Length: 336
Image (tube, rainbow, N blue to C red):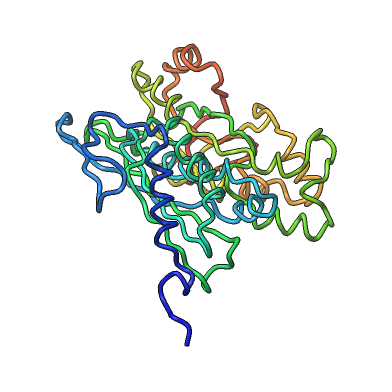
């Protein structure tokens, strides 16, 4: 009878330890408030410099965008997506990203593939100024095929209680500003994959108006908005509400921060239309509002400010786009 051990069951402890060593050797962003290093049982974080700190937490994944990455064997960008999806959610409360943890589940731990994934996470954490402090890597044979993996991320931010942004003070006449997205970000990919299958498209194909393979457009990583928000907050812009435009688009996400009695009017003529959304619209022929409920349509983050702060905000951050205004009425969004 053959000897049975953990490795023969499909879980290689030595390979797992080698992966931890790969992470340790990365040039990890580590501010002074992180009190230990990767590889311990847990992580130690000091928040002693805050007067009345409130922790803000979020968990998210990359969704079926991972299937596109795995299909074309490009894994270097999905880690950035993972960080972005969690950190951007934390930012809506005005919180500074404090630390990040990841969870990786796979059928077989491929060190080259996971090395690329981790490098993306490290890059995203650097962009977010948010240290990677730990995580879990689960090698799960029989649960996942050998070449499949899934990702989850956990972002924790911190904000002084008196500085929390929650949308409660939003009122009629406030201005709606937007920060451009890089593309699809990490939402709507189940629909995108169905589109590719039903229309007989190829991920390697080059279709108008693109001059590169379709997969390159699809795998553009999600933007991380911390540095842009930090510029505004540190220079006295009173941001009254922030919405991360993810699944549900502007239609479902903006109302989450609005008080009763007001709605957001969005003038879509001001949005610089990205070719990827024109391509999808042409292929799918969805109703206009459904497009704005499924995709970000070129805007990744919504900020609501008082009219008095408009000029100063644009001076600090020229990439801002004025999208509309807050009006009196039933809470919701009108796409104009």
